[in-house]
Length: 214
Image (cartoon, rainbow, N blue to C red):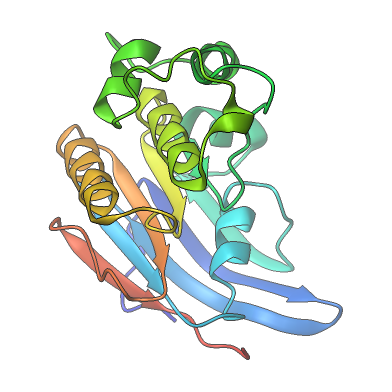
């Protein structure tokens, strides 16, 4: 359970959320909230349910019990689409399109942050000069950076980041922290899973510890 109390004005609020797989409990029941200008850091070992929790919040999996609210209202597919940007373990990119084509395609699907361009986002994440490179030619770290560029372009206020430091060097880790800082300063929020190696970006942060079998 989280030490974070649920607020009626929270950007995201969760009550009694539980999930099982093949009748085996994965997590829950959980009660927590994430406010604007705040990060919630979700920690736990392998099998604790961190990725599953984010997939449930993103609407990719159905919970067994509980309530998810966005801006004080029950989460619906359309509200999740407007409010949530999800960065998972898989890049979600089209391998035979160029890096820039991928970003433009995803902006067409999900919208674009005001006054931002795909080219500028690639520069921010350190991929300037790779605009025409096919995604299949990029390294794992470069694909992660391209995913971060897509995240930066999203107008969604709530970021769900599943192990965002994976496959990144120290410069990439600092990049993630700077992006989270900037997002929170603009009124956004973030829910970040981690094994704990990189405890938290230097922002207003609360903790949620998940247990579970390895």
